[in-house]
Image (cartoon, rainbow, N blue to C red):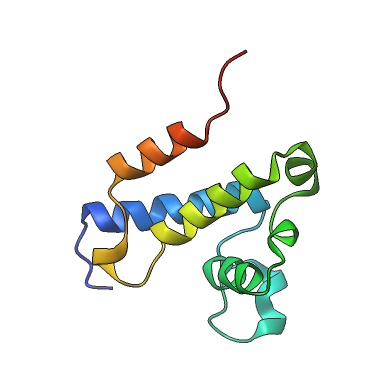
Amino acid sequence: MTCRVSDKADVYSYGVVLLELISDKKALDPSFSSFGNGFNIVAWASMLLQQRRPSEFFTAGLWDSGPHDDLIEILNLAIMCTGESLSSRPSMRQVAQRLKQIQPPAS
């Protein structure tokens, strides 16, 4: 909004890209038009989490491949990255650490 680039702006962008990848929707997907002006992928993800319907966010193949707890953890991480408050967003180092914790152990 301020046209200044910062680490926290990069974290926001990463969160949006992550949301796009796991849902196969665009940040301003046409399917959001029924929700009203300004509704975007971040609002959609937040709404589905609040309504305890996270499975509806993911592409069917991704959700079906599970594990669901890990997928929901990734969705929550993306929401943290896109938080309105800059100070509440994690650093990219923290994001990478969380992703490593979520990653299933190699077999």
